[in-house]
Image 1 (tube, rainbow, N blue to C red):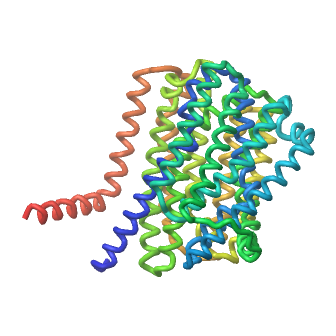
Image 2 (image 1 turned 45 degrees about the vertical axis):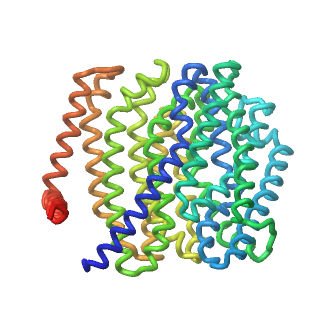
Image 3 (image 1 turned 90 degrees about the vertical axis):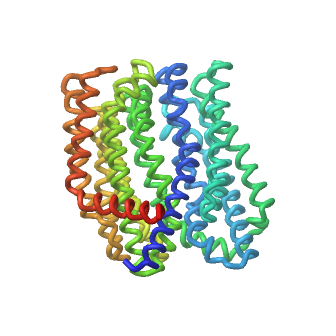
Length: 501
């Protein structure tokens, strides 16, 4: 590699890693509420109440994309195309206006057809006040999500992080107050989300105006251009979340809300990696759009970063799956301890989904091809729903987890095939597949005693065994990649010697 190319590559990787760290902190702060608050939720709410609350909260997160019409994607795609500041302000203002109008219409529609809404998604839950609060929270969530997408498009990781941390503190404080002090039931979590969404949507609108990021505007041309891009992506965005959400609904209907609560606890543990994945994707997408335009040099940067990230991500997934059992022992009451058994399946699903996240970027980058991205996501969503419908009645939460894994495999297969037809970018897929097989083998070996002997709580012999497996896997990887490792160490040593001189 030429010296100039190496400097350019290092600067590019440094940029995306810096934003990844900042976005990671922001995403963790805004979406890890369930994990951070898990001990409080599970100690003060029964598994039934927790299942009810998470069903309504998940409804807000799932259908927010419908309220925003996936215009978040349009902001990411076109924000930097408007070089004139005035045009950019009008563009953002038009998007905000469109989202507000659509959210109001969608909210009114849900209120009119509330009986149908209850029968489909909230069987056994009263519309007043739980579901009503969820619908109102959806309206304000759409506005705040557009604001955060604008900050993301600007690649302002610091502000994104500050907003997300503040959101976390408000939701955590409100939920704790409602649950512990006022001793509210499942409605506490929904009310806390509603209050936070109202406050931060108003804060976001104020900042967009005060920082002169938008002008109050409703330009038809901007909206039509944005909707032509975002509407074909809407089924794709919705499919990414609705499959898992409908698995919860099937659990609620066929088993119980308590079983749904158990599945949610497993999801919260695996969400540690989901948050990291999402945050890397937030920073990776705008950086990818820049690098793909640089030709061969940019493509090499993309491949190198993809492989490194996948390797680190896989290693972290193994560690979390190994010790989720001990983590739940300290975090939740005994009735939730069974949830650890499902966690490794969900974690491996996330490892597989990483391959999807990077390959779909080539499709999203191509404006014409982006219209067909829904083919990929809908196929995964349909697979998830069908497998959940078949498996959940027989193996409950295990069925939901297996349905999720199966859907990710189908999604990745179709996305990779379509991605290569649109834009041939080498992400290092063959290396990732080999690593995924290695992960399965290591997980099977490390967790075999825990499943075989039904081990619960702290068992030092089992912990020692799992640590030994991790150490062995590190030795195997090091031996296989020893030449690369030694070259890196050699470069570091030479740099230190030059600095010493």
